[in-house]
Length: 162
Image (cartoon, rainbow, N blue to C red; front, top):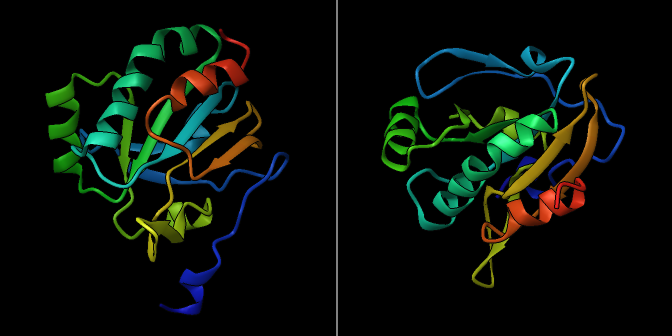
């Protein structure tokens, strides 16, 4: 483990959200700045087509309409290649934007990649995290080490949508 992996940065409310431009499942470039004027949920997840990540993506898709009505868009970030994201979107009929961060630079900037506990062991990997970014590009809410199951429902409650 290197020092850069050891202690990821942690974003808090009021911090400027790290800017990014990454390819989506169709290969189109998606930038955080594309969402200026609207709030956006940016969530980081370890791997497409795995049980927990599928649960989370399906839950976000189910809530996407209600979240959009409340002025919130959704962008999921993983280290998966674009081709795998496309398979994930097609297989699960996902109606959310998923982008590829293979070098993990964006996830590191968000503090969503680094040392974490997995089955009682310390490992370096993607830390399942969710960020609500306001219309000006500042972090409104940052949640680290979130659970895949039930997270979207909790987020909806936290945002006053339930």
